Image (cartoon, rainbow, N blue to C red; front, side, top):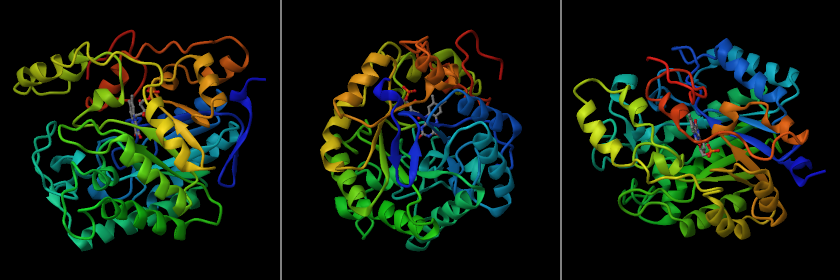
Length: 397
Ligand SMILES: Cc1cc2nc3c(=O)[nH]c(=O)nc-3n(C[C@H](O)[C@H](O)[C@H](O)COP(=O)(O)O)c2cc1C
């Protein structure tokens, strides 16, 4: 039996195999943030398809951290019944589910949250939304720390098997960690230790809210690819070491930020025409110029976060490492695990196209996933339509 199908422990949870569905915003929640039947069906299919652990798309922990119209909320107790239905369905289908919890920070828009987006610093205007964020006060920081704790409590009440803190992709936690986004000079910035403090306080608050041994995971950027230096692999290794000391149960390594470097995050084709559909007529000419320039520069490389993962591996000790980003060929996945470069193989886009891929690999029917990284699934996000594989055609928004 392939090493990919050997079980492994994460916190008190035994995962039956080494396949993880990496968090993927579904754009399927009701506009109130509640779970919809369509969203439940997505995870039911994945669970029936044999994936070891499904991590949900990022759920917002506080109304000010909502990034998308059809994003799932975990910011209020009234969300719990829908979340519980989601978990129960996954369990009945034989799967395990982790909730990714997040605050979108400066990568949200005023029109969604009714106020200027919150961020560690108010530096510059966001290149996608053109908004200037508001530097958070001490009280606002503590309010969000507490909101993460409350969200963790709701996840446990809903029966989720684990929680993942979204500390990647330029959202609020990752903004605090990044010297590019965080130029504060108080105790929340100015040094690596201070920039790490927000994540540390959130972890402590979450740990108080969950039972002993309950798995708390972190998704961490290894490279921000921002115009000026943000997180780089050596800094990510430092943070990963501190996370291991704190007692985190697994670290997933990723890269890129949604608003400055989304093509680094999701290497592959640039779906210019589909992205442009989300813009109004007067934004299209500038959009075409900016997005068009990216075409042909981000060809998918198999396992594009592997080199960073190898830097981080030694500092983690026994803490499991999930590797995401361009994992496509079964022999390569096996090699990564055999070389001890990672413990779990995470994928996002391949599971959108083929939710049953794990069972197919197990039955020897697949040696390479068929996702071609056309990235039309990614273009569904700004168009606010449900995330599916649109390789054969993109619907009219
Ligand atoms: C449509 C779409 C939505 C995504 N939403 C999230 C998300 O909610 N949280 C997150 O951490 N990453 C998100 N990602 C990034 C993926 O989890 C993953 O890191 C990235 O796609 C690279 O992995 P892949 O090559 O297997 O697709 C998203 C990616 C896509 C394509």
